[in-house]
Image 1: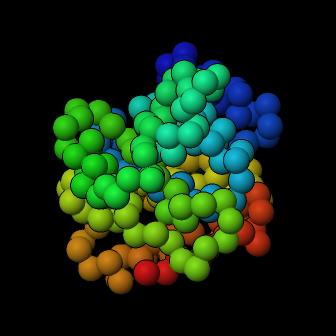
Image 2: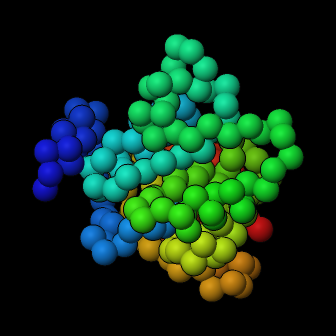
Length: 186
């Protein structure tokens, strides 16, 4: 275990969190879905969880998060600024990031918001499928105080069947604000 991993696990343990699962050492490019996403504290879990599991986690955030005085910190935490006011194809953008990288775990909260949404956004699925990479089902379970990887899932192209399988993985995972958890639907 690296010094960075030990440090991250120690930081998480200060709040009684346990790291679960692992990222296979030979897996270099993937999408990590982080769910449920019901609190700003989920970023803490994503950053320290990825450090504890020893992968280079990056996440996409609205460009407003990257303004002074916090912009440098957000980039250091793995943030990639995106301009959501412009009409861009985020799936193509993110899939190309993965295709062009030798080593990238792209963290995406499929709910797209900390508030309750009608259903999950499916961009994560299409990004992984288009880039030809697996989806790692990342969790931050506030009930069990566990952060990490619950499962590794390779998209088949049948989104309806794949989402059913993913729904099963998340059925007992609880966010900080369970009432804000969005249904795992297409």
